[in-house]
Image (cartoon, rainbow, N blue to C red; front, top):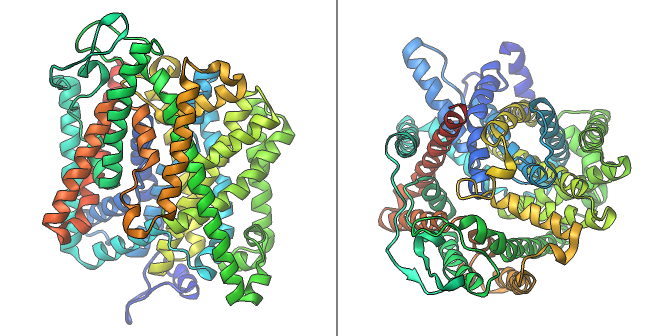
Length: 619
């Protein structure tokens, strides 16, 4: 884009250093680099999302990888080094591609396949992912001025990415060390995964202890219940990223679910045993009962926490109005900020252009619902309009806490359409899919725009990069999902693919369609207890003094432990504990390197797992 872009960047206020030339920004190589890295990282999030229901923010990993690639090309062939603003375009593109997982690939789309058998072909699935994600991109474009410029919301992930970008572009040694940690962690995790898959199947291990429960008088072994150590580094990496509170909560949830409630359910005849051998996994029959209290705990806690977050948002907005009545009158609501001229001017798009974009994504998302899932046009329009509002809420909550409540917002739409269209599981799931996809992409772009705000990037260029990333993620994500899970009904909610988010969305849709009759024995009572516990944990986390809040277990983590094999929760705890001990021993080293090393473990095993799964399928 050369010299013509220099003046445009200058007008947009791009950061400069002394008398040096203005740094390039929206270049072809930055976009292409982001698309290639995004296409490689997207399957990682699809893999981990279907394994444990979590995905990883790929901004820092994408920035490090791109920096390493272009630094190597510079040394080998004299190529121009990647500048910080170009790298920001790269990470915006790559992270938005990897964030396509929020558009339903690990939750409503496979849940729909399990309930109805409907599986979209690759091209139509990619179009669907793009359509629901585009809603969030447009909403975020309209919110930038309000949330970042006027209200100065934190968006912690964006701040962390900006700090990392400045460090790696400002200190070559620091960047080299982090890159080697990322590569080393990825290589180690990938090698272990491939060895286990193709060379020597290292067994999971547990002490030879039997728990004296079980229908017919046969006790369950620890191996039957999944209380084992697993030769995998994926969850170790996630534990190091999540922290000790989440790790302890996961361990507690696993012991409660698989060490206490599962044997109790077997003893009372609420759940069935599996294969009658000491080492057989009974995950599949037991999770059919455990997922109900686990999903209830996660959903109720998330909705309660979301209600508290929105109350905080309301208080913040009232304080803002009191300090700045004139500005608040100009932008009286977030919805008006999306449509108004303030945000349009800030990103360099005309008011008519913003309105046109909103109408286009409304039409595209509505048409996709009608044509692909036979949803009534009025319900389809209502779903998109509701998603606009909930995407705004997601951006605010994510801006304050760094957590995007995609699951909680999806449940709001599920509950709403359970009343609007009772018994229609397709409408229930896919209208909520619109909400989840819009919320996820909106929050991802807001964090990227926060990064750009700190380092002096041009918002309009980042929005363009986000669109390229969404397109890449839609194509790569659809292909990865269809290749990994060709038969959702037989493959998901199994020890190999626990898919806890799929189990949760599926359970909610079943209850809304069939009522309490869809529940297994005693599950209703367990759900009632879990609902009370979810509210209690969420309230305690919000109202207790600051020093005590970190002692409150995470209800979401406990509920998740009900829906995945216990060995995953044990590995996550061990990763969190190891990271905590390293932080205590070497806090300065750990501050900037633990997350990078852990990200390498996640990316490495995910890529190797995708390769192994594809090799198995093709064989």
